Image 1: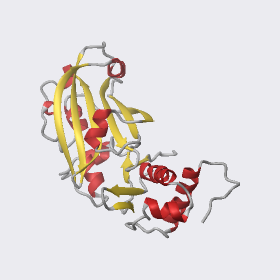
Image 2: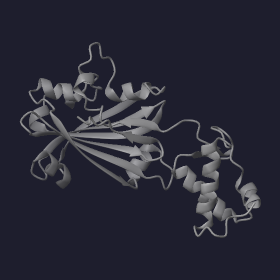
Image 3: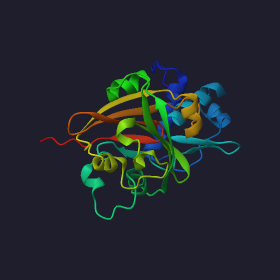
Image 4: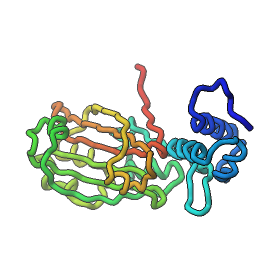
Length: 257
């Protein structure tokens, strides 16, 4: 099998496109083993380096996963859906009998077990966090850092920053998961989350992020930075969530009325 000579893309991109089409059509079914580098090299009359680059593209897109000594396989599970417009839903938060935090609700609705590991500390506000919270750079802020797991695999990183004068003696300062939600705690403290401002960017992860999320080389992350404002338009929280690009679809529901 040969490449299309009229296609001006690099050969590895052409090969990635051919394999992607096989995956999308079902010819390469979920869980199927992809041919080895040597087999693909022979089949498409190209170098092993071209094959390696093509497989890297598919890995970075989340279409295939590789296991040391076993080869590459078509991903068996779809990306997790991150419902950004529901994470701040007051109606969901106030549901009677709530026994799970928002993350666990979303993950378990998609057939996985969710859990979080939290730490809490007081740190000087960076230039960015201070600007979003209307504070002075270096002013102390409380931060809850969370590593969020789905079926024991790290899925997301979430850091929430708060003005220390609001949360200093509250449950937010405890490393115990807040099942009823930190928004509920803020409301009980007299700061009702009334609106949110979201900033979404995509970039390569830091070394610390890649380590915590066990990311392979070349996989980008999405960064959602949400600023919560209360009934008096005071910023009360800045939430940063880091989403591996090969594992997530970011969704919003927007009321057209």
